[in-house]
Length: 125
Image (cartoon, rainbow, N blue to C red; front, top):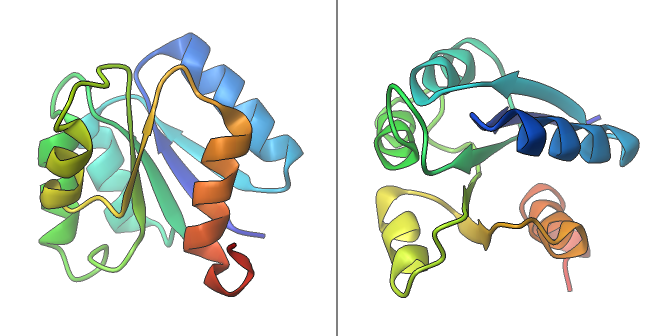
């Protein structure tokens, strides 16, 4: 079973996405802000991180940079999630160290495809 860290401050988004990922067979651990997300990622072995970019304490951009600067989390795939899908956001997320980008509201089949591509590259289309 793959273990995913979901870093999301919005309770409705957090609950909806974690329930859907659990139904798909993933183990999901939740962090509610950027600082907690970084600490949890450094303490636990996660297969993938879903990182909201608009977070309290430490935003997703800075949290991602911190994780990329740490040998324990440098190789963990990170998918940025943002409701602010503005031109250039995808590039900004990738330059911060994210491996992929997805916009909110979450389109579950699309996001699952991106998760699968990172966790099981051999089965990706």
